[in-house]
Length: 143
Image (cartoon, rainbow, N blue to C red; front, side):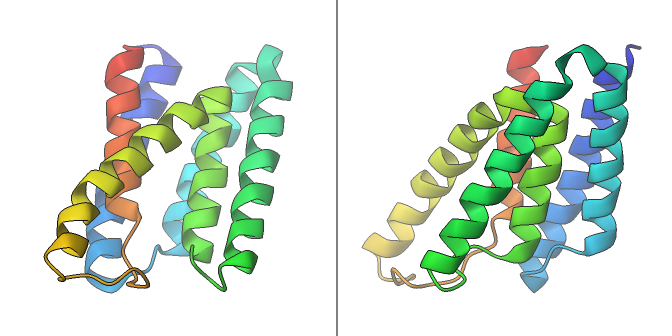
């Protein structure tokens, strides 16, 4: 098995665990974000020729979501920001597809909740399960 495929597999397993924890507790443990970050660093070392893409993606994701958190007064949590930043070290510019799948899925799931008044526009939701699904879809497409 190629190293990048092994990294994807381990990442998906960790993300499924993160998804369950985030869904139940609305928190993403730093230890799990560190594991994803370590996988990202290993990926960057393995694919060192594309280091610029990984670093630009990671810094851009971090800056964008930190800005979004500040503008929305915590509309996105710190654990989510760390997770997405670490995932950018694994997916590089393809993090945009992960984000597309993540947010498209979350919107599709949340619209009925808003429509049937189970949720309000300012309701807090766990993003972890949607990120796990977004990564899973991206990896399936990639392979």
